[in-house]
View 1: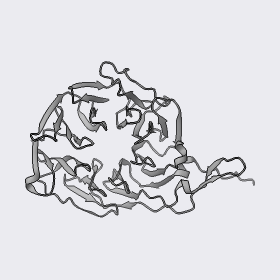
View 2: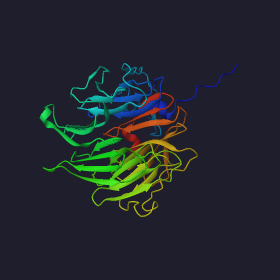
View 3: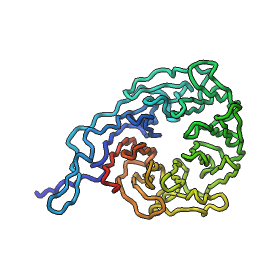
View 4: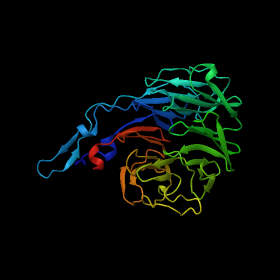
Length: 376
């Protein structure tokens, strides 16, 4: 009986290290020094992997002497297994970073747990007065902020005297430092409050709105804030002049918001293609103002995305499991994965642009290492 030849490996298999975690991936995050990746799982554990790829695609590229064509050979080295922590929380567990190497999670009881890249966990080394609802750490200033008990606390070092009570924590859903650590945005029951931290007397501006504010995303230059809305869509804010605009006409929840510096653009998930706007003409007056048609419209929504740190590229994952790279404002797409491993639920692009970490709600965790030749 004739047997069909084995199918050649897909681009995804040539570029990726992938694992079956056995639990839906809720979020994906690189640590501050970009040496490790944490996959936050619905079963309350973290799965951890090193960014270092022992058999990277660029070492497996073969250039034909006949026609100069480049091909990537399949992997020959075994992929190291993920490191797993003990159960730390539940499917609502929040994930962040602290210091240069470690991760920080809010456990089910509201306590903070610090996790090192090897999977070892210990209690957070800052004594807090009660359960934590939200937190953030700024690597630039090494400051930590949390909504804890009934207060928003800014902590500059371990000394109790360094703690500053900014406000009462009234229904805080998220809080985020700007990239330079000079400002802090707090989403709460009444809207969004922005604190200026680089003055002798901390000042604040509140932008009231409804819709159930969720996760906050600062633009890299600190001029804009995009806030997910539980009621659908997101809110775009300009703290400098107090302008706000809700963009709510989405077929699916906006699970990811990112900023692309190269294209000076805001991009979101939730639509049937990557939703993108130029921040040269932000959409405050009309949702169509500054809109950039990016990628091709499909039949299922984009569920997660991540922006390249220095190029006008966006990685987009779909409800169908498809994973693509698109250029902001252009229709062309590079399909990294066309197989259905579950809806893409988490994406993160490394700071050097060389790796994309991805997780799905069927429990796949993967790290794609991108050879430099891909973007020449």
